[in-house]
Image (cartoon, rainbow, N blue to C red):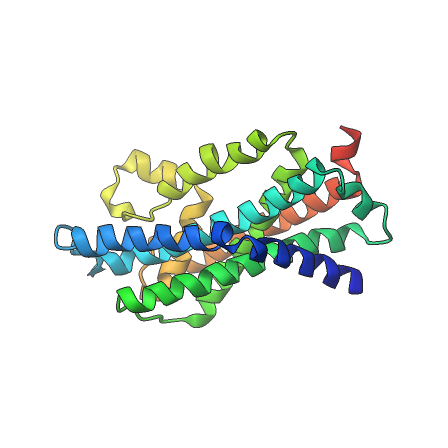
Length: 251
């Protein structure tokens, strides 16, 4: 297991060396949202789903930071190794494909944990929000981080330029986050948009985490867990299959 440990340490050290770029921006983003919605216009949108609006949106903001951190870490790290032409050295070593996959995922999850601690520190000083289930907070954040770490690794496999790496978070993930009920409840939507929104997987992550914080959710907790777990399983086996086939080298 020394090979897996070495790769994990390399991935963690990579984002820690540039912590001003990898850890600080998500915290600044969360603080700005909390200031705008929590301090400046809170009195205009005071109550939603029988809770304070700032308490309602914080779980979604936390989930947003976890998604972007996990996805960005694995996608840019893997593609960076491809771009620098050193990924082949990793794959001609005795290290198995599943260890390579796990090593990159550990780096992404470690970055999520660092962002999580920094965001929670900011949250502690800015809002008075209670957590009803620490267990479900961890479960939803961990599974979401793992899912998007795998998705980022898959993007890194297919990407042929840094533009390809940026396309997915800019044009797919970000719109899905903003349409994932981070800032509003499903009760505010018309029947058409309410039905359409249910095909957005991020809304299940956001609502699952919201339930863990404030016991308020627009979807079933176990449906949300089931959807996330299914995505994790599918992405894991698909990414592992492509790694074993050395897709990026043959293409």
